[in-house]
Length: 265
Image 1 (spheres, rainbow, N blue to C red):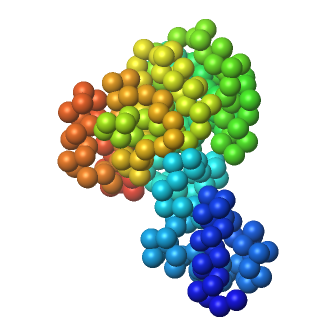
Image 2 (image 1 turned 45 degrees about the vertical axis):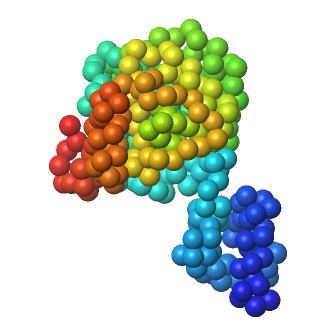
């Protein structure tokens, strides 16, 4: 199979399945994985697909949600700096809620310096970070495990949330848009995020700049449901000003904070 034919076949498979992976293409196309990765890179450079960890998706796929592993290897500096900024908003004695996601794992690591906190979460990696810390009372929501995301969702988790009231909820999102609000690809994930927002006195959104202007399949909140938005300076200034003008308390981590040159406050 010639290179052009191989690339066309990749695009056909992508259109049919909405996702391809290197190992699967290796079995179908009978070429080396390095060749497939080169093909995917060139197709991405031609704006024909978007590469992911181990494969590719269509450029505009509102139903796609990266796995926990894919999230873990992206935007690490931004997520760490955002987490430090978020931790500065927490006070000893607070009852807080942490959503699922890799930024929340970064925030969980920051919580180890506190001596008295109650943390509610539906995220297994967050719970694992806090399990051995004596100063934190940990409440892990029960429910159905989303194995790729490592979060607990569904009616059991939502029923637990309906009995709880927290001071601050730290929420993640796959997309934030000025008019379309906050969205995620999965309906069960959207439902529990909505419950988290309803259970909290103050809602703090943690989202790096790659999420801005993204719209996913299921909307779970409007901008008016959010009190505070923490992001990084990868977004355009006029866009950040628009979010601030909607009444959001906006915190933007700088390049120096992302590089660890100064401490986020």
